Image (tube, rainbow, N blue to C red; front, top):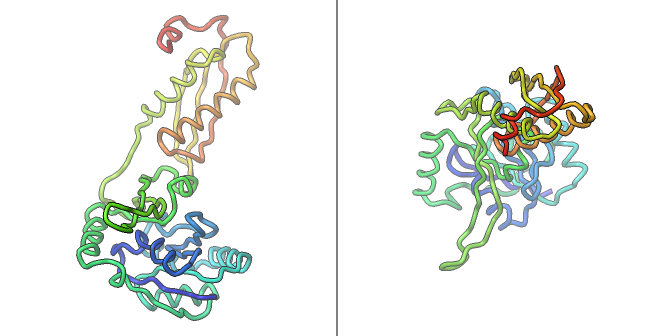
Length: 281
């Protein structure tokens, strides 16, 4: 296997330029911050950007955890890539990753200064320092399931081919890791309630919500609510449809996934409340 290292200090734009470097060297596989990536898709691993501390982030990036390491090693053995690009902040880091993942020696090293100007590197460092944002070379959809509740910002990457002509290099994602505290991205419980209430009152089978609670639990959210239904409809089918609609809309509206939704039917009415019907219309 051909192993190429892409090296540069943290925040200098390595992940941003990883696809360029890989494509120019006919490399389909990238190892970046704990992830094994194949053509813009996460194959194995977990992102160091999700670690709660910088020390934890470094350990994930170096594949120090046995279970994490074995998962990526098995994926590499199964896929047998001809070449892999390893991103790291130093020669030693790239070599350490190659050793931990049993990839053999690093045959070539590319430095950020080889592919970016001094001005571009300075701008990248300023963005990291001022905004605390990190780039991961995969589309946002690939990350949603792993970054529930984190701020995701898709970034389209183009490379100048000639004057006025650009080649589309793919999409990357901008994330704000937990250990970056330069501001917060939050959505109030009431905003979530308004979305859910709009869905419930818009269904013919449902009348209204009588109790609503949203709690954070582990890597996801627990939504617990009581409702009043309209008599004459299949209760189980209606509740299942409501759960599916709520889950889909909250993923679209707020990038909230891993949602557990409890709906308890507390009462029945013979017809839908007039005020609610008018409000929905």
